Picture (cartoon, helix red, strand yellow):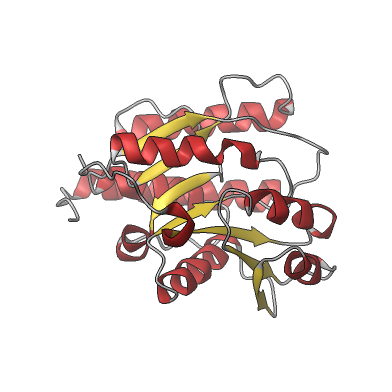
Length: 241
């Protein structure tokens, strides 16, 4: 268990990181709302073809523009590296489509301070009335598979709203390139015996639009899970200090 972190100066030590692909309709509102809690916001524009970058900058974010779509996993890693280079110790990750409520941010910070956990993940599954049926079913199935893999109950393995220590994100082997990054991050922290906590969050679904490609991304996730099963069975890992 990590040592509890008390009285963290979150405004100076934490940056909000938002990977985006064609989120111009929502990103400005998201950035403005997040800055009320975490003043420094970094947006990774993952090859958008709309006005995502301009809108994010206008709302007060620093934007890194990718010339082409590199995938959520790579976009997040680009953001982690940039955040560490700027001297930040923590990163708060959330999506740019407005489905995460920035008003929940204090719960992540409070959980990290009280428990000392280096990874805190949002849990949407306590109230799924607004969640589309397909997403609810897929998330429940994936979370069950992850729970079996790590040997403990994982209520919401796919939520992109999470707070983590930057040094561990960059030191641990989180190498996935696309949407399987949330699962990879979670299992890697468990594999290296790092504490993971969950906090209840609200979820806002404004439309059924998603950047996930069901067939290709599902196959990629299944292939990733098979690799993880082999890794968990084959090795006993040491705790990362």
